[in-house]
Length: 218
Image (cartoon, rainbow, N blue to C red; front, side):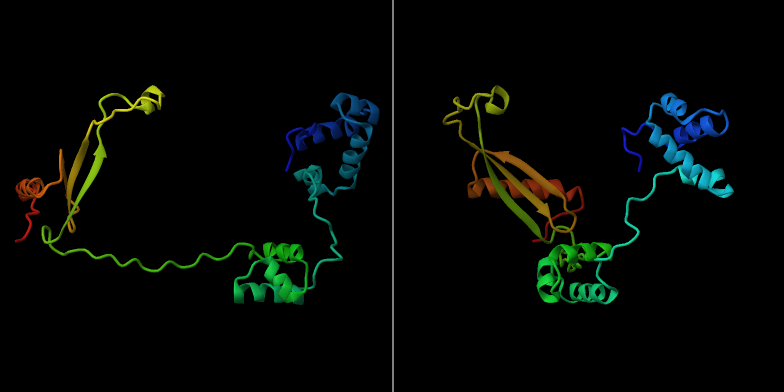
Protein backbone atom coordinates (compact mmCIF):
# COMPACT_ATOMS: atom_id res chain seq x y z
CA UNK A 1 0.00 0.00 0.00
CA UNK A 2 1.30 3.42 -0.96
CA UNK A 3 1.84 5.55 2.14
CA UNK A 4 0.52 9.10 2.13
CA UNK A 5 3.93 10.79 2.13
CA UNK A 6 5.42 8.83 -0.78
CA UNK A 7 7.09 11.04 -3.36
CA UNK A 8 6.48 8.60 -6.20
CA UNK A 9 3.37 6.69 -7.20
CA UNK A 10 3.65 3.86 -9.74
CA UNK A 11 2.81 6.34 -12.48
CA UNK A 12 5.42 8.77 -11.16
CA UNK A 13 8.02 6.00 -11.20
CA UNK A 14 7.16 5.23 -14.80
CA UNK A 15 7.59 8.86 -15.79
CA UNK A 16 10.92 8.94 -13.96
CA UNK A 17 12.09 5.81 -15.78
CA UNK A 18 11.08 7.34 -19.11
CA UNK A 19 13.27 10.35 -18.39
CA UNK A 20 16.28 8.03 -18.32
CA UNK A 21 15.30 5.42 -20.89
CA UNK A 22 13.58 7.55 -23.52
CA UNK A 23 14.79 11.11 -23.04
CA UNK A 24 18.38 10.37 -22.12
CA UNK A 25 18.44 12.05 -18.71
CA UNK A 26 21.31 11.16 -16.43
CA UNK A 27 20.46 9.63 -13.10
CA UNK A 28 21.33 12.88 -11.36
CA UNK A 29 19.10 14.92 -13.69
CA UNK A 30 16.20 12.47 -13.38
CA UNK A 31 16.54 12.54 -9.59
CA UNK A 32 16.44 16.34 -9.56
CA UNK A 33 13.44 16.44 -11.91
CA UNK A 34 11.54 13.90 -9.79
CA UNK A 35 12.61 15.42 -6.46
CA UNK A 36 14.08 12.14 -5.23
CA UNK A 37 17.54 10.82 -4.50
CA UNK A 38 19.87 9.35 -7.10
CA UNK A 39 19.69 5.94 -5.39
CA UNK A 40 15.91 5.93 -5.86
CA UNK A 41 16.37 6.47 -9.60
CA UNK A 42 18.92 3.65 -9.68
CA UNK A 43 16.50 1.31 -7.92
CA UNK A 44 13.49 1.83 -10.19
CA UNK A 45 15.43 2.03 -13.44
CA UNK A 46 17.21 -1.18 -12.47
CA UNK A 47 13.90 -2.93 -11.81
CA UNK A 48 12.58 -1.71 -15.15
CA UNK A 49 15.62 -2.97 -17.06
CA UNK A 50 15.36 -6.40 -15.42
CA UNK A 51 11.65 -6.73 -16.24
CA UNK A 52 10.39 -8.77 -19.17
CA UNK A 53 8.06 -7.44 -21.85
CA UNK A 54 4.87 -8.47 -20.02
CA UNK A 55 5.98 -6.85 -16.75
CA UNK A 56 6.84 -3.64 -18.59
CA UNK A 57 3.49 -3.61 -20.34
CA UNK A 58 1.56 -4.04 -17.06
CA UNK A 59 4.01 -1.92 -14.99
CA UNK A 60 4.00 -4.59 -12.26
CA UNK A 61 7.72 -4.07 -11.60
CA UNK A 62 6.93 -0.49 -10.60
CA UNK A 63 4.57 -1.56 -7.81
CA UNK A 64 5.66 -1.77 -4.17
CA UNK A 65 6.95 -5.15 -3.14
CA UNK A 66 5.43 -7.06 -0.27
CA UNK A 67 7.38 -6.49 2.95
CA UNK A 68 6.82 -10.08 4.08
CA UNK A 69 10.12 -11.99 4.36
CA UNK A 70 10.72 -14.70 1.77
CA UNK A 71 11.90 -17.11 4.47
CA UNK A 72 10.93 -17.56 8.13
CA UNK A 73 13.43 -20.08 9.52
CA UNK A 74 12.01 -19.86 13.06
CA UNK A 75 8.42 -20.49 12.01
CA UNK A 76 6.79 -23.60 13.45
CA UNK A 77 6.54 -26.66 11.26
CA UNK A 78 3.18 -27.79 9.91
CA UNK A 79 2.75 -30.53 12.51
CA UNK A 80 3.15 -28.08 15.40
CA UNK A 81 0.73 -25.63 13.80
CA UNK A 82 -1.83 -28.39 13.25
CA UNK A 83 -1.56 -29.36 16.91
CA UNK A 84 -2.12 -25.75 18.03
CA UNK A 85 -5.17 -25.46 15.79
CA UNK A 86 -6.51 -28.79 17.03
CA UNK A 87 -6.23 -27.68 20.67
CA UNK A 88 -7.98 -24.43 19.80
CA UNK A 89 -10.89 -26.19 18.10
CA UNK A 90 -11.20 -28.80 20.84
CA UNK A 91 -11.05 -26.51 23.88
CA UNK A 92 -11.68 -22.96 22.67
CA UNK A 93 -8.74 -21.82 24.82
CA UNK A 94 -6.86 -18.58 24.30
CA UNK A 95 -3.18 -18.34 23.28
CA UNK A 96 -1.80 -18.48 26.85
CA UNK A 97 -3.57 -21.70 27.80
CA UNK A 98 -2.70 -23.27 24.45
CA UNK A 99 0.93 -22.21 24.98
CA UNK A 100 1.05 -24.03 28.32
CA UNK A 101 -0.45 -27.10 26.66
CA UNK A 102 1.84 -27.18 23.61
CA UNK A 103 5.03 -25.70 25.07
CA UNK A 104 5.30 -22.82 22.58
CA UNK A 105 5.42 -19.09 23.44
CA UNK A 106 1.96 -17.55 23.57
CA UNK A 107 2.97 -14.93 20.97
CA UNK A 108 3.87 -17.73 18.57
CA UNK A 109 0.58 -19.44 19.31
CA UNK A 110 -1.30 -16.20 18.65
CA UNK A 111 0.42 -15.70 15.28
CA UNK A 112 -0.35 -19.28 14.32
CA UNK A 113 -4.03 -18.92 15.22
CA UNK A 114 -4.26 -15.66 13.30
CA UNK A 115 -2.56 -17.18 10.27
CA UNK A 116 -5.12 -20.00 10.20
CA UNK A 117 -8.10 -17.76 10.85
CA UNK A 118 -8.66 -18.99 14.40
CA UNK A 119 -7.68 -15.91 16.39
CA UNK A 120 -11.33 -15.11 17.11
CA UNK A 121 -13.53 -17.54 18.91
CA UNK A 122 -16.45 -18.79 16.84
CA UNK A 123 -19.79 -17.28 17.69
CA UNK A 124 -21.76 -19.47 20.05
CA UNK A 125 -25.14 -20.29 18.51
CA UNK A 126 -27.89 -18.58 20.42
CA UNK A 127 -30.67 -20.59 21.90
CA UNK A 128 -34.09 -20.12 20.43
CA UNK A 129 -36.00 -17.56 22.44
CA UNK A 130 -39.25 -18.97 23.75
CA UNK A 131 -41.90 -16.28 23.81
CA UNK A 132 -45.41 -16.76 25.10
CA UNK A 133 -48.19 -15.00 23.26
CA UNK A 134 -51.91 -15.30 23.79
CA UNK A 135 -53.56 -16.40 20.52
CA UNK A 136 -56.63 -14.15 20.77
CA UNK A 137 -56.65 -10.33 21.15
CA UNK A 138 -58.10 -9.20 24.45
CA UNK A 139 -57.57 -12.47 26.33
CA UNK A 140 -54.42 -11.36 28.16
CA UNK A 141 -53.61 -7.80 29.21
CA UNK A 142 -50.43 -6.47 30.78
CA UNK A 143 -51.20 -3.63 33.21
CA UNK A 144 -48.52 -1.39 34.71
CA UNK A 145 -48.31 1.91 36.60
CA UNK A 146 -45.19 4.08 36.46
CA UNK A 147 -44.60 7.01 38.84
CA UNK A 148 -42.92 10.20 37.56
CA UNK A 149 -41.90 13.29 39.54
CA UNK A 150 -43.60 16.55 38.66
CA UNK A 151 -41.72 19.85 38.38
CA UNK A 152 -42.98 23.41 38.57
CA UNK A 153 -40.02 25.04 36.83
CA UNK A 154 -37.40 23.95 34.28
CA UNK A 155 -34.72 21.64 35.67
CA UNK A 156 -30.94 21.52 35.33
CA UNK A 157 -31.16 19.93 31.88
CA UNK A 158 -32.43 23.30 30.64
CA UNK A 159 -30.96 25.81 33.09
CA UNK A 160 -27.70 24.05 33.95
CA UNK A 161 -28.28 24.90 37.62
CA UNK A 162 -28.49 21.86 39.91
CA UNK A 163 -29.06 23.90 43.08
CA UNK A 164 -32.66 24.83 42.25
CA UNK A 165 -35.29 22.13 42.62
CA UNK A 166 -39.05 21.89 42.31
CA UNK A 167 -39.92 20.95 45.88
CA UNK A 168 -43.26 19.41 46.78
CA UNK A 169 -44.38 19.46 43.16
CA UNK A 170 -45.92 16.02 43.61
CA UNK A 171 -46.07 12.95 41.41
CA UNK A 172 -47.87 11.86 38.27
CA UNK A 173 -48.74 8.26 37.45
CA UNK A 174 -48.75 6.75 33.96
CA UNK A 175 -51.31 3.92 33.78
CA UNK A 176 -50.65 1.62 30.81
CA UNK A 177 -52.27 -1.50 29.35
CA UNK A 178 -50.72 -3.61 26.56
CA UNK A 179 -52.62 -6.37 24.77
CA UNK A 180 -50.46 -9.49 24.65
CA UNK A 181 -51.57 -10.62 21.20
CA UNK A 182 -52.10 -7.43 19.20
CA UNK A 183 -49.54 -5.34 21.20
CA UNK A 184 -52.07 -2.53 21.24
CA UNK A 185 -51.09 -0.08 24.00
CA UNK A 186 -53.24 2.42 25.90
CA UNK A 187 -51.93 4.97 28.43
CA UNK A 188 -53.44 7.65 30.65
CA UNK A 189 -51.86 10.06 33.16
CA UNK A 190 -53.44 10.38 36.62
CA UNK A 191 -52.60 11.94 39.95
CA UNK A 192 -52.75 8.68 41.95
CA UNK A 193 -52.74 4.90 41.64
CA UNK A 194 -55.71 4.04 43.83
CA UNK A 195 -57.96 1.10 43.06
CA UNK A 196 -60.83 3.29 41.90
CA UNK A 197 -58.54 5.13 39.48
CA UNK A 198 -57.15 1.88 38.06
CA UNK A 199 -60.64 0.38 37.69
CA UNK A 200 -61.98 3.41 35.85
CA UNK A 201 -58.89 3.48 33.64
CA UNK A 202 -59.32 -0.19 32.73
CA UNK A 203 -62.96 0.36 31.79
CA UNK A 204 -62.07 3.28 29.54
CA UNK A 205 -59.40 1.16 27.92
CA UNK A 206 -61.98 -1.57 27.24
CA UNK A 207 -64.24 0.95 25.54
CA UNK A 208 -61.36 2.33 23.48
CA UNK A 209 -60.05 -1.07 22.40
CA UNK A 210 -63.45 -2.40 21.35
CA UNK A 211 -63.33 -0.19 18.28
CA UNK A 212 -59.90 -1.62 17.43
CA UNK A 213 -61.10 -5.23 17.62
CA UNK A 214 -59.27 -6.02 20.86
CA UNK A 215 -62.07 -6.16 23.38
CA UNK A 216 -60.96 -7.91 26.60
CA UNK A 217 -62.61 -11.17 27.59
CA UNK A 218 -64.50 -11.47 30.83
